[in-house]
Image (cartoon, rainbow, N blue to C red; front, side):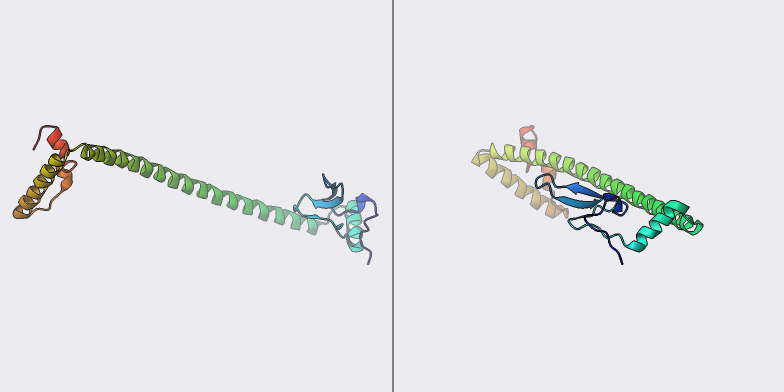
Length: 169
């Protein structure tokens, strides 16, 4: 069996293969642009392959080869279409997730501002005001328990500070 020789003419390389030279070293290597494979060894082209290629060049493809090539091309087209649909579904899913995360972030940022303003209100209280606010909260809790209702500190605003500053009790 004959094989491709590195000293042979470059026309002997199998289809898709090219000799490329390394930028720094200048050494040749072989690259297949169809598969992305690179190797320092020349690709092997068997004698039988050379004969088949020559016959194909002289006679053209057979009906069977054309039928197989069409079937392979159709299968590849269908596979690529399905892959594209899957990528589109993934893009839509990721877009929805991103949109939901942006909404959640916006909500959290609003809640952060609300909490920060409450902290700022509390931090400006004098000790006497804090004691008075805590006393009112305890009274509200007791009154709510007597009525059989739950206690909701949010009803009082920031533990009663906002109502108090607004002139409420």
